[in-house]
Each structure stands twice: as structure tokens, then as C-alpha cells.
Length: 295
Image (cartoon, rainbow, N blue to C red):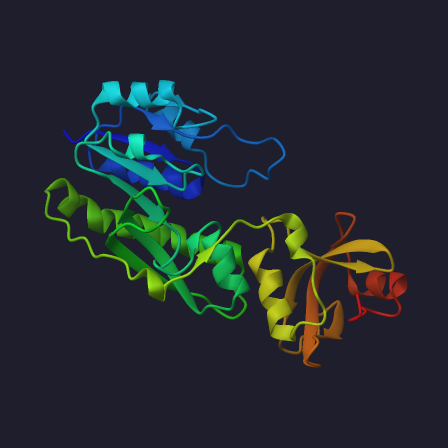
């Protein structure tokens, strides 16, 4: 039986761990994260799945600490798998498995290497993305590609919509790769890094709307950070309002109509003030001058 230690978190982590168990891979240990009480935990739990299957799991602050490395070394894994695990795995960890370490990344590598690739793809107006199963190297998301699955991004899709598609694509990519990988017959295609891109993480404050930007750029930001992510926001007469859904097409159900810096219309379909939803009448009563592009 093939033996693998799994580093995993989030919905994709849980679903991919499920695939390994479905394929009969022995998982003697799962390394995951403790949920952060300050974070909106909307996703599936790797820890809960491990408990359900009586798999031991640990949540080290640093997976590269000596204790974790020695624990994994004693298990003699053939593979290490990383599925949406948030910490980088160092060279000593990556050298432990006898048959290699592999990661699942939420983009079509080499594009969108790095953090929050799905959000970045939506924010930057991409029309497709996907999931890539690849060999791990010390430098993030640079290893040879074993399997990829593509998904399309619609003009009004939010990052959450795309995440659901990428999660399914990740499961497909893993399933396509596992058989050949276990048989020692998986093809590895080197990445052309010059054709790709790298992006870092995002902070909630980066969701502030710059009304000088074109309407489409604003629309892409709104859908790229829409809930369950922190959301785009603006300041209306000194108050913070979250803009949660917009459209570039005329919409008679819009709460408000404004324009981007290019003069093109932008329709606000959903927004909140102090965590409470605003409807059209409430918005007009509280903000009779509308959304000010100079904000």
C-alpha cells in the first residue's frame, strides 16, 4: 500500500484527502492548521475529516521545526502531498519522501504562482483559471507539472463562484495524476516560468475602491473579494460601506448607479453599512448625493 503524509487545509485540502483515502493510500499522519478565531471559517475542515477516519493529525506553528521533521521521518512516507496548506515546506521536509513531494495549486501554472491565486485571477479580469498538480520545490509553485484542469471565469463570477469550480478541478487533476504517479509512470512537464506570474497575499484594506479606476476594474475588484472574503469597500460621508455585488449592465434592481473613472456606468446590486444590508430606499435616504467618485 502506498504511504503518504498529507499537509492540508481548507475545502480543497479536505476533498483531496478524501480522494487519497478513496484510492486506498495509507495516510499515517495529516498536518493541518488550527482554525483562526478571527477568520471567517466558511470552508470544509481537514481536521474533522481526519477525525472521522481516525487519522492522527498535528497543527504545528512551523511545519519545518525539528519535532515535525523527525515525526515524519519516522513514518517513512513514499510521498508528501500538500493541498492548500498555508506554510512553505523547507528542503529538509521535501527530501523525506522516497518518491517525491507534490502540491495542488489553484491556478494554471506558471500563471498566478504564489498566494490567493483565485482572487487575483478574478481581480485581474482573467477569463479562465484552473488547478495544477505539480512537484514541489523549495521555491513556491515552480515544480514540474503532472496534471492540470481548466475552468472558465464568467464576467460576473465572484471569487467564491470560481473557487467552487477550482475545487472540483483540483479533485479531477489529482485523480488523473494518482494512478500514473503510484505506478511510477507520471509524466512531468517543466514550467516555463518566464511565461507566468507571481502574486503575494492580500490584506482586507486592499479592498478599498479607487473610483478613479475604470468601471470594469472596480467591478472585478468587487467580485474578486466578495464574501466570504472581506469584500470591497468605500467611504460614504465618513462611513464605511461594503460593496458586495455590482454589474456593468443596466439593472433595474440596482441600489445605486455610479460611474468609474472612465465614465462608464457601474450598478451596485448589494451593499452593507455597519454589517447591515442597504436597500434602494434606505440608501437614497441616507446618501442622497449617491456614491462620490472622488472618494
